[in-house]
Each structure stands twice: as C-alpha cells, then as structure tokens.
Amino acid sequence: MRVKSKKPDLAEGDLTPMIDMTFQLIAFFMVLINFSQTEANDRVVLPSSQLVKPPTAPLEFPIILHVAQDGEIILGGDTYTTETLTTGLRRELAVLRAEKKKPADANIIIRGHQNVAAGQIQEIIRVAQENELERFALRAKEDLS
Image 1 (tube, one colour):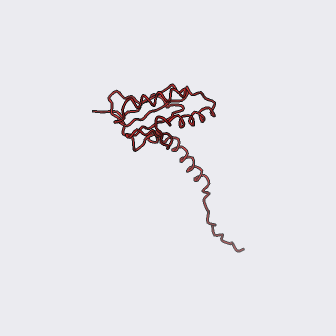
Image 2 (cartoon, rainbow, N blue to C red):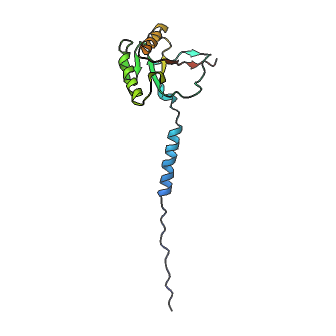
C-alpha cells in the first residue's frame, strides 16, 4: 500500500484578537491623556506666583475664559469683550441647563495674561455673577525660584 505524504497546509494566524487588543490599548491611552494642556491658549501668558497650588480634584463643569493682553476674552474659540461676554456665557449656560444642572454648578476658570489689569478681571467676574455664576478660579503658573 502506498502512503500518500500530505504536505502541511500553511496556517494563517487570526489577527482579530491582536486588532481588538490594539483598539483597547488606544482607548485606554485616550482615557489617560492629560487634558490640562487643552485649556492653554498661546495668546495668554500666565502670571507667576509662589502661592499657586494645583487643584485637588478635577472640576465638574469648567467654563474657561482666556483674557489676552489686548483685553479680548476668548471663550470656546470665540472672542468677546466685557460688554459682549454675556452672549457667550448664556450659550454655556444653555449647555449646562441641557444637562439638568444649575448655573451654581459651573466653575469659571479665568486665565488672564500677566499684563491684564486686575480691574478687567473684576469686570469679567461681575458680568459672570450677573449671569448667576458663583464659583471662580484664577490660573497662574508656579514660580519655582
């Protein structure tokens, strides 16, 4: 009797588990990305302070206002003045109310340029308070010297 020799078939690996793991790793690292750099703006150079402390916990609903050296207020990519800032804040409050939250739940983060007058920052706070916003945080960079 003649024995037929079988040539082994080429086995192809199943790439599905490897692709699945790759997507899981991508999702994992996307969750771990530090979003603190996303609140930065090139037109704003923060003042230095030795008393700066990092926030203890992430803010739940931050509204970030960038105040440029020329006095423009940048909110969500749009520019405002203190007179027109109410328009931008009302838009943010509409989003807040859509999430069934109150204006008191929002945190206003003011990132003022180091050469902006304190009076202008106070005016921005006044406008925000007129729109029922209550919680404020001023940003500065840590002076390590």
